[in-house]
Amino acid sequence: MSNVSSKPPGRSWNPWLSLLAVILIYFLSQAVAGLLISLYPALRGWSLARITLWLDNSVSAQFAYFAITGGLILGSVYAYLRAFNISPAAIGLRRPRWSDLLYGLAALPLYFVLYVVTVGLVSHFVPGLNINQTQDLGFNNVHGALALSLTFASLVILPPLTEEIMMRGLLYSSLRKAMPVVTAGVVTSALFAIAHLPEGGSGGPLYIAALDTFVLGLVLVYLRQKTDGLWASMSLHALKNGIAFIALFLVHVR
Image: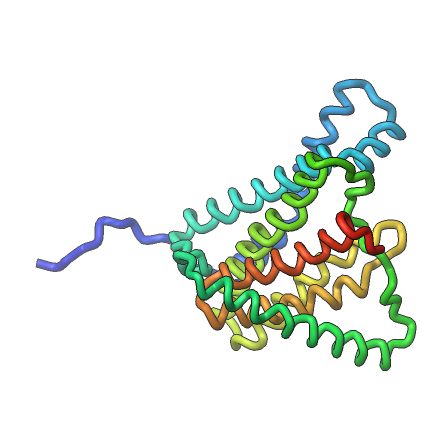
């Protein structure tokens, strides 16, 4: 008698559908989060100018935006995996190991060296590159322990978790089914970089941040491939963001 699995077959894992899903998840999660955050001042009858001022200067509002966006991303990725019967381990969500943290720590100097070399080369061939353009993080008035804690959670905990699961998890794991590993890594890192271009705010596209995240993305993909998991890349991502947090909000280096 044949052994028939009781688990219903899922739909096929389509890499290109996954790419489309990641793009939609990225933009829709931000749009929905922005809409939900805007409901509070709108219901209170605030003027547009007051709403803009509140969104730009309220640490609580910024944290709520990051938390809602992150929750929507994680929920959407989970729903996608369930819909296509994809196990979390298939996108790198295996059991964490102590070696993952060691890999993340070891990759930190590698990332910094590659970034410095890359910026030097690009600056040589593109003299107009503004390497001093500042990133608009949205946290403009961070004072006190609570505000620092919310900012830390928004910048150091949530992005490494959500971005790694979405980019090096679902996206990279999908693309490497349709193309060579190196190509999948470059495409994933390029999309990761493009997503950071708008963070220049009123100063225009933030090319230096895109360059930074492209280099970081390549190292994160390497860790994902090397360890067959996401925890090492999450560790490096959190370390990199943690250093930036300390510089910007504790040491106040601008």
